Image (cartoon, rainbow over all chains, first blue to last red; front, side):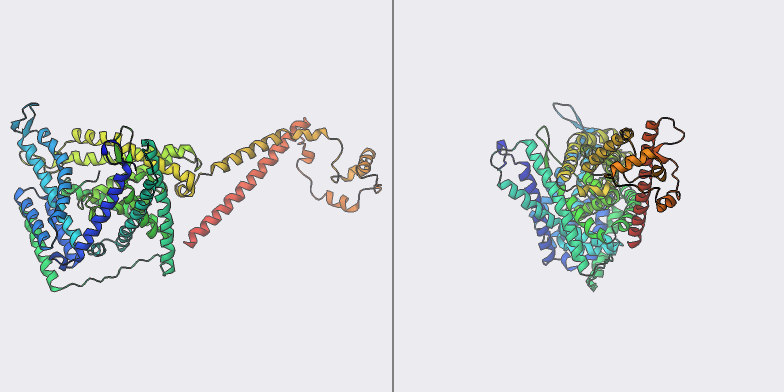
Length: 276
Length: 356
């Protein structure tokens, strides 16, 4: 084992944990997307276009009311789509930690009228700084919620195919679809490589050795990636691939999708106008 | 370095999508032409590799850890344009499915990391490594510097984009609407972390992967190093050149030998008594014909060499003339061989281009 002193996790364990967490999150999202729920019942194109419109509205929103309304709408949609609060909380905490770390110094660094002074340091907490930090954090939380909704209510393959409705070239859609699939193949390969190496380590490893181990693992993974790309190419060729890519359009547009699209359009327009 | 949604104004995001679009278009055209049918599996698998490599926690000197983006590795192994596409795809998947970087900021993230980062890495690597052999240590150093410079260029672009937000987008009271820090705060804040921790992680992973590939499979480095030859090949060539130069210098030794070489007689040798004796002795006492054979007489006059007997008429010193003949002769052979190699190589390349 490579656990370092003081119970801290080693880099191998951190890397393993990160890979596992990514795989688990993706599996969880796919399970949720394939389940029953309000948004799950809409055509993927409606959700992609509609939620992207709301994300753009949130990203450009400069009014607290509009941003709060969008966040509330996102939470209601998540509830109706049977997304658990625990799942959303992870994304919210992540966004809060990231945005908070960036926004916190702005409270003191942004020039403006002082709201109060900190007791020991005497730093001035400004109203403009507070407003700026609140905007940043609220906007980040709202866009994260809406992005989360998109991924947790739409299967990955459908979401990528729906990119065609935004005029994304078919080659890019196919490339993105294959990339998504092979991410999990390579994550599994990396997981097995690191796990098998970790199981053969006894005692502590020096930092330089750990560094060498991870760099070598990256090199091995690169070699395996090229091998995989060759195998995939040969498999594609054997099935008649000659450089042209096609996409099967299996979406079925129904009456409720018009209603959904209209709803998103109205909400987006209101948020854009109200957010100015 | 992945910019989330809401940190850049919509106009900045739109501008950076527009700035990235021509690079994506050129990259797609170039890669399609270079890789033809192979580009779909190669790009998608390598984009997946770039995604996975970003999860590797690298222990750094000082007890901290850092993540690499893989832009250096991508640029060195795939080349500048294919790496732009591979990294853009990885960033698209990250933004769309994993919330790492915003959907509205995808254009900005691609511009900073995939375009500015990968093109810088490819340029620096090419400039430093030159035509060094694939196994050369210079390539490891070049890779490390390329990764380090690339991630810092990407970070600088990100910092400038952040730093411009409060300048252009703020409320009437002066409260910034998007990223709150001006350039004089954003640039140092961003660069300190990247010049130290993130830059070091990128340097270590890029140079480490190149060093690993040199040991295990250097052919993966050959795509972006068309002028490089293997180090064994260079050493072999060097030894050959040294041997050739020594032989040229030693050519006057041939003058120490007396008489004609056996079988290289001229018709005059058959008339000269001393030469006839020497030929007879060298031929085991077999008597010579009275005069030169008719065939020899007739054919020996068909072609007269410009420098007969390796002795240019303009040079008085026989030894110097002999050495000069060796140099001129060797030079002519090298010239003809190089010309033929170039012509054959060019023909082969045109044929390969036609077949694509």
